[in-house]
Image (cartoon, rainbow, N blue to C red; front, side):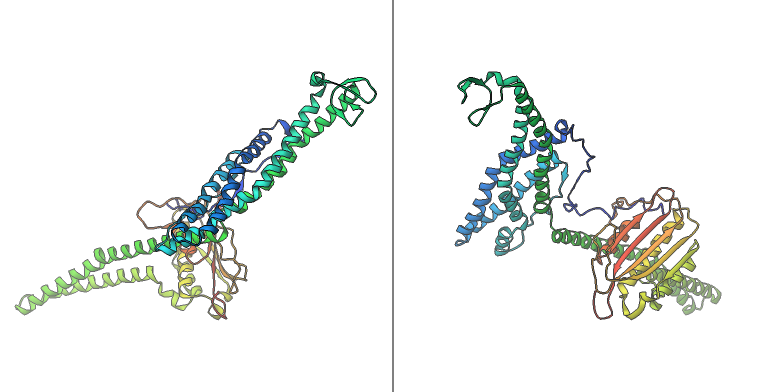
Length: 482
């Protein structure tokens, strides 16, 4: 369906909640790795982390000891809380280093929001999980930074030194060996000096091997930093879920408010105006009859009022159908069959008999499923140049996870309702921003509505088609809520 050009991507990640990750890297040759820009950026990262480590470690230790020591006071808890929250700033510094030098794009945790109330504020500051996780990162990475830099720079320095030893050994001071002779060069033990061509060649060979191993030793330590950065400095699953629910709830409330305003406007400008006209026409007819006027004219006024009344009733039915389709009173399957019969395109509907078994579907879920299919079928008819639409509605098991945007419902005892709508149109469907009216129509509205009940929304629409939209909605198990 190539509609949906006026929608916001429903699959957009929650602000500050992107899943951490890094850019994919092609494999590097063992011989050229020491000269790769990536290797030197990683060595630069280890160097900068080492420079930050003593200050970060001191801050982390101070935060723990100060918080414990100041807990006997009340006002001091604000200062301790500010110190804990300051860990967020340190986390931002480390995320910036990882992004700039390691190409590791870690999502930013949700910003701190101060709650109302004195004790709530103190508790939120002292218990700021993001701040404490950053402090833990600073504490854990202190010994790792020292070990990583020392090991890495040892491989690099020794490798370069051994590879160039044949050149600079002559500037070393002479020493007396165990044999009583003077030797110039590096000494190992009492009598082993690197002052002969074979031994210098051996030093160069060892240096070359150390230099070739240096990028991979560096990479091992960088991998540990990447894991720790992703684990401790990114948003937790719980915080991502909370942010997603808050965003979904806000969008749902705004959507509902906009729809109510639209219904109010339609009633005011349409049905109400017709009913006012009917009242005026009936009043005029009554005056004609009361004054003994022309009965034919009064009858004409009544006929006009009668026609206006029927038009008003039609408008009211359309408005009511937009709120709750009467066909849903007989179940989702019947409602979808009725929708298919009224569609401008041939629509094939396949509904799993188990969908409506044992009261799995609540009225709200039926309504979301119905309007989802209705919107997608309308889009296919208006924009996709499709010759037909296939709708599949089926009940799934406990695993209701989906691959689409939005947060999946996860594993549920009652399973899920899966809706797949496929058309053979020209494809190229996408979700873009709304027009600013406040009403999320099209795919953005569908995705917001689906996420409001903890569902998933997935769109696959390559250019040339076909377009397949898969919606997964959590359902209710026969034994209770899912």
